Length: 361
Figure 1 (cartoon, helix red, strand yellow):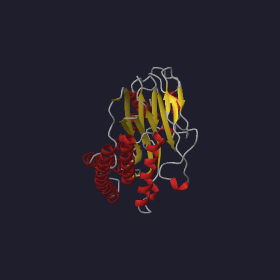
Figure 2 (cartoon, rainbow, N blue to C red):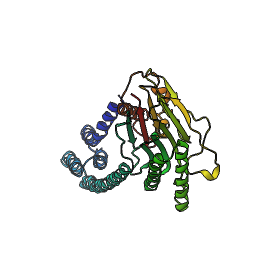
Figure 3 (cartoon, helix red, strand yellow):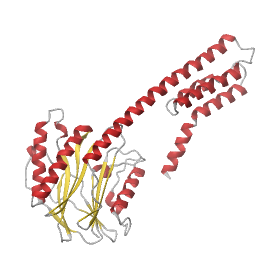
């Protein structure tokens, strides 16, 4: 329904230049000779400039000029100076509309190029994980907020190791290529630590040290992008459980086969990674049963902080509760979740969103 309304609104907006010309013709035809529909004809090419192609803008200007000439020139009672002034005004505005169109198209092309480069960089840093690892079904999804060419610092990674399948989902503070650089540090360190460290807590400490070094290396201007909220998860081989270490990140959700949803709240709040100078205490992993046909959902705050037109947040725990046997495949779950969040926010998300789902068959 929301998509149909948006599509209808777009069609109405694109028809405005034609409607303005039609309104000008009707007004000029029905009113006494001294009255003119020139303002309508003047507005039409300006309306076409950001909406149409160059050809469409030129055609709109020519139609507006021709319509005004047909309606005004035959009236011999009108002062010639007045008719010439009206025609000159519409011609001048039409030329300006063409110039505006050229500038808009050039800006759009540059923005599209910058966005494509940024998204390519992000895809290189965040490759999609395999659909199956160690018997688990896995899916990941990155949803950009579409704010110009900016890209965020949301991240995810999955690594099979001798100690189990290990996962991380995080959010670097900041946007742009600086944030992507920190994402690369986090993912590179995570993959190495996941293979070498025997405990999930030790993996978190490796990430802490790596981000502390990265924060010190950066200049003061970029240091604000040096910390990351993150949640780490571990699925031990041959065991129906999940271990979680949460560093200031939204709590993961366990979606059970009967539709029950459980939030894996951290028993002790912890600071984000890269903020060891503000306080230090040992990480403690929490454990939860991970039964067959259950799905573990990890996400960034782009999901939980998406607002609707009334300012209400999207609550994934509430929205996903009661969906027994719905979206069994992780990829289908994430696709439906992303579509639902966009509908909730009216298609205009305020922040990027990373999703990672793991299902135990």
